[in-house]
Length: 204
Image (cartoon, rainbow, N blue to C red; front, side):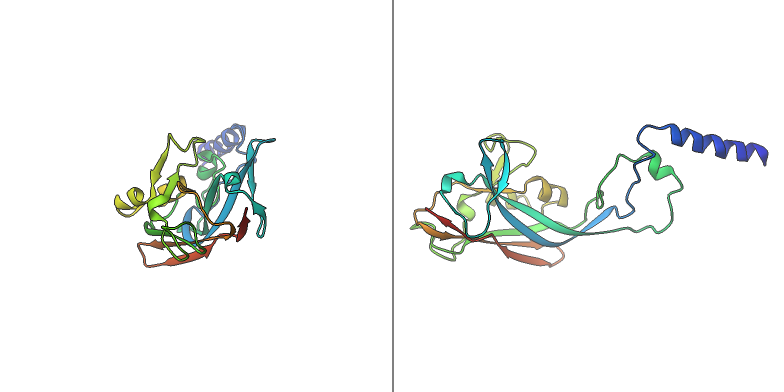
């Protein structure tokens, strides 16, 4: 019994000695469930080279828009209620809640213009032919982008690729000045559908 107790003490001493483990506790909610979609319009600030989000009603030229960011809203949960007794701490790398992802897959992503975009795309038209998805891990749209139609043609898209290709760009330029907004709809393989609208802005 003394040997067992000694091993337990040594185990916890070793755990305490690991760098970062005293301040990092792995979240129990390791799984994710998509419950919505929030788009935002992003422009790049030349002074800081960082992203800035365009506010509703703001008046800007089309050239100021860098891309449309697609943020999937999630609910996190766990299939285990028991404590990990330190083993999760040992393997922990300060992962965020929902880090194991979701089994849900994206089957459809549609982009419609709310107002007249150009002669080929009047109000309510699909913009699939000019929509491009970009990998958020790279800053160059030319090196890691894929047309939306090709992205969906591969079949149901995994949750990780949904998050990976979450920057939407349009290859066309609107010929109409005035109000601009997009209606974006995603459908998952479990039948869930989420529709949202980008913040309406004014183009000049």
